[in-house]
Length: 379
Image 1 (cartoon, rainbow, N blue to C red):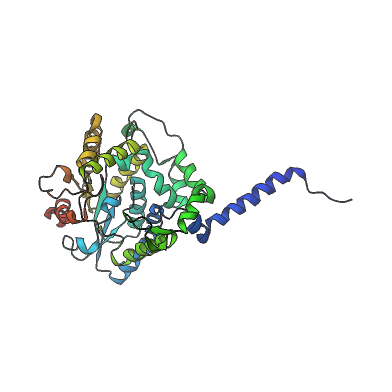
Image 2 (image 1 turned 120 degrees about the horizontal axis):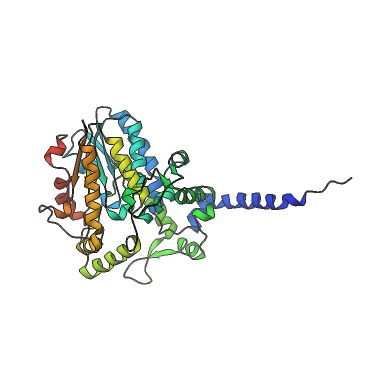
């Protein structure tokens, strides 16, 4: 008797074939051609693994040097080891900042570095309401964490409260974990197919302000070069990316950008219980270690600062951060220092490229505020 393939298995076979077909879109050559060349944020996250390997190699090469750790967003991406050598001699400072790097991302790398048992000279932690917003995790879910860390820190039974600071969170929410694994397993979920991106990736880039004039390279070639640049600075700047923009933008642009930023991340939204949990977790991990920890409110343009003061958002946030830091500061061998350059009279250079990013020319003014003498001496 002739055997026939069970009809009931057809859907399973089809699903398996579609699953296999989807994996083709994970191939680098496919991603390069189908995913917009303008979307570079994910690579900053993914290449922190490369930076971690560089850090281990440097520690092996120069075992007498201590480690400085910078955690935050692109606003802290300027701080490089050479720049900080003046404040922390015999220290290699590694910059793990990434675009909108939230506390969950910061905590992940802090824990990875602490596990190495390397001698840590200081830790800089950047905090503000934008990094604690619900949407701040979007980039890191795309390009950071490892599966075991996410599973280990899933908060299955989270109870919601009106005040996120009072929520008894224990890790990532179920929704966040679901998004993470969907992006890990399904290429077309992580890299949605966009016909316009395919065209743009293979088209020569036009030079701004000169319609019709091109740079002589395609979008994907530009992105490839930028990725190589990130890998290069991992080795020569230990993860820092020099801010080569040294001008102040017009007030009208800063106001519009501030409004857009506020509307996208903060208007009508409560802060993320996930990010509050991981911030507290970082403090607990550093509690009693004797490592000097600088908790840093990044400077923002005046229009954005005014928007964040709306309804007491910024004041409440800053007060909660200070309260959490004060709790751990009372413990033996705990060294925490909170600094807010926004309110420091010594902050004079206030030129902004956009509502979030300070001009590269202003960083020399900022550094002595972040790293005063008593911090350099280890408190």
